[in-house]
Length: 262
Image 1 (cartoon, one colour):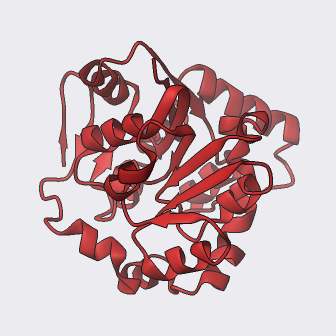
Image 2: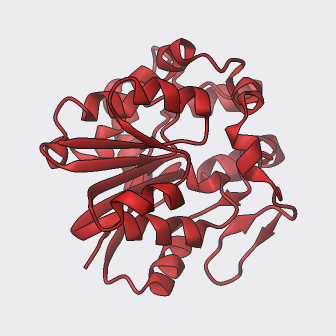
């Protein structure tokens, strides 16, 4: 792993040369989640899809053209599709694209393909837990920017290096964080650098703590993820205060890069 001394971006020594074919394959989904079934995707991701509205709000999608880059099986888009004027699903997996096309969504494997029809025509672009997988994050953001109409808004979310977890767990956590599937770990400095290269004027980074104190304690005890583990002695108020504190101090485990096209 390497880290930029200026923007603090972290990246792997070796990036996959043919990541497109890798992410197009069912083997990728099976290696990631043990299945490539669309029904299994919904079972595993429906609940977390609703949580993503904390990043975007709900009112911005009504009667708008919305695109989700790297949308997987489209669990988040299913909710957006109920109010949006048009939904665009961008996903390498042919199995998932077929399922979304059958629902009436316009489906494309990559942004480069979607741009042929929708350049400058999309009101809202979202992409969650995708940019850390790509070969070139700058190009990824540039293409998302090209999709947007004037005044259109994008939300790009990605895990941070979770500095609290790294400090308390050290190598036990870093072996999990620096996975081969995530060649990049981006932060506020990374997105500021990208925004400058893209000539953006209206952008910001927001911080979110997805996992509570229970996950931290479980990690400390077991050296592995506890996800949304709960302990009776951790009150909702204490947990909420802990999350809010990490977000306010920009030490949270998730960051969302928001930008508006001039």
